[in-house]
Image (cartoon, rainbow, N blue to C red):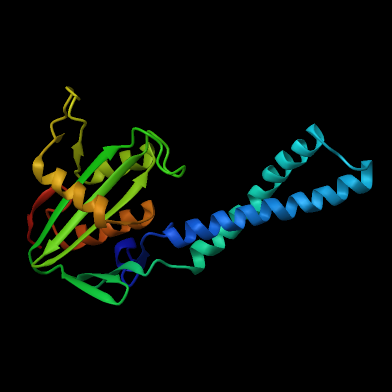
Length: 231
C-alpha cells in the first residue's frame, strides 16, 4: 500500500491553535505559575525562612521557569482534545471540507481551479511563527465553492515542498530581485487577501498530505501553481 493510498480517509484538522485554545493555554500558564510560586514559597519558608525583596523576585522568576513544562503539557492536551470545528478529509476521488456543520465537496474528477503561493515571514508572528519561516498556501475553487488552506513551515520543510510542487512566490513591492515564478501578480494578491481573512491553517505534515492527495488525482498539479486543472 502506497503512502498516498494509505492517506485516504485521513482527516486534517485545521486551526488547531484557535482562539479558544490560545486563551485557555494562557489561563493555564498563569495558573501554573501561581501554583508553582505558592509551592516554592512554602518550601523556601520551611527551609530558610521568610524571604523579601530580591528573594521574592528570585522565587517568582523560578516559578515562571518551572511552570513552562506544565503549561506546555496542558497546551498539548488542549490541542488534542479541543478541535476548531474545521477540517479537511482526504476521500477517494474527492476532498471534503468540513466547517462547523457546513460541508464542501470537491470532486477531483472534475475541473478544479487551484492557486499555490508562498512568502517569507519577515517578522515573528504571535510568538509562534519565527521570522525566516514561510507561509505556503493553496486556494481551491470549484463552482461556487472556495476554500483557502495554508501552513507555516521552516526553511528546510519549505525547500522540500517547493522542490516537488511549484509555488508562486509573493515578494515585497520594493524587492527588485524577482524570481522567474514570483512577484506581485494581482491574482495572487487577491488570493492572499482571501487567505488572510478566511483561510484555515494546517500543520506542515498535513499540508503536504493535502498536496500529495491532489497530485495523485490531478496529473498537472505538481507543475502548475495556477490553472484550471483537469484530472
